[in-house]
Length: 75
Length: 309
Image 1 (cartoon, helix red, strand yellow):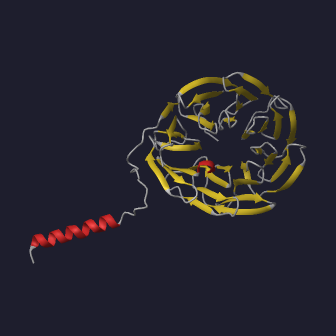
Image 2 (cartoon, helix red, strand yellow; image 1 turned 60 degrees about the vertical axis):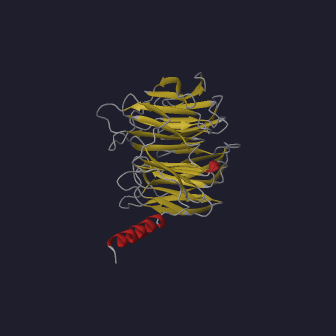
Image 3 (cartoon, chains in turn brown, green; image 1 turned 135 degrees about the vertical axis):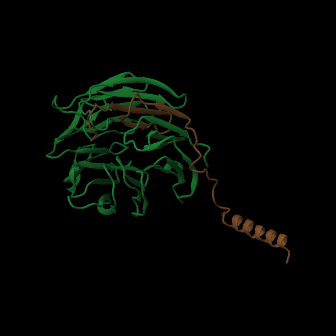
């Protein structure tokens, strides 16, 4: 049996295995290592005790922020 | 002091900011908004009511000068009622500033208001009371087995179901969520959840830790439970039944699922650790920190998810 024939068959088997391991129903996935830049970003002046609320349509966002006093522990 | 800031996420602009006194320096500040954003409520030494354009409509005062908002404040969807709790009192106000009801409690109370404004839930770690806001009649009451002041409460939009959770009794690690519907109580036991938070939207209740631990999604109809273990990071959930969406954050990894069948629709990595998650309309909103070890946020991130299907 020719070596190059065996290599070709081996590659074919690996290819079939790789393709069969992906379910056609699986949705397109983004690797967790691949970041999607936020459409909006806001930097708080400092690390803060903060909470947010938004309108039902997501158009408006309210942010409440308390600066953490130096040496104080959040409760 | 608390600083309140309103953003227009369409244009990405800050619309206005306001600052008010808040003696609760070391607890989470509270801000609420009606579904249409026409009324914004900031809570501190008093309750401050603002219009969307930043005009201060009203200041609602508590009974004693020494009181301030501690664990909870709520506004009904239409903005006609505002409920809040201080260290030992719970209150219900009208938007016009009338104090409709108040009660004193031995332990620290929390309040929850149904979206339609017809039901008010008040709870401490030891008891709960459900009121009709139309005649302020007590509809249901009961006892609770929790310890310490960290109780959380949530009411369904129409008041037909409500849930309570608090710190377990000393010596017990598991967290028991109490869920009432049709006068029947269902108990759901979870693992470690630090400073438990609750929310109800549609027929779903979700539980997570304000400062870490696992998260869970519970059907208020049949108690079906989905648990989201946290691993090294805390797990945070946001649910939007109207658009059949569930958002999940574990550390910096964000996932968007279809709520009905859990199908993964989108996955990405946030610029840092996610600490709070909201899912409203086409926006996925996170409070987070670029430092993966941080417990407090220093960033707001927003993704438009309208094309993530």
